[in-house]
Image (cartoon, rainbow, N blue to C red; front, top):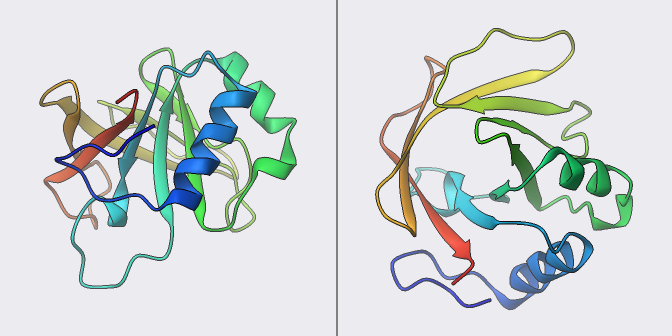
Length: 145
């Protein structure tokens, strides 16, 4: 897995972690870096955020492998092209959301919505549907190269 020339540099330990996820779930279609590591922010980034395009089967597999959870990486599995969910709780809560649509809060979950648009095969733009978030973010596909 190599870095994209247009995207941020990903350190070897994070790339090795993504390879571990791919070994556990070889049917993963792609990894996309988004969030503070993909976009300049006022605050220093604290973690790595990845959308992992795949299926509910990938989500179920990862939910059963707690050893792959890292405190410095947030993984969200995108299934059926629109819905996404984290396989493990983040700050004590499961996070779930949608791409391209705005949705209501579900019981006991933080729900996110992103108006997601692919710019190219390796770059996307998105805007959060939550009113307090900024607009015009970028995401970068880091796998496949």
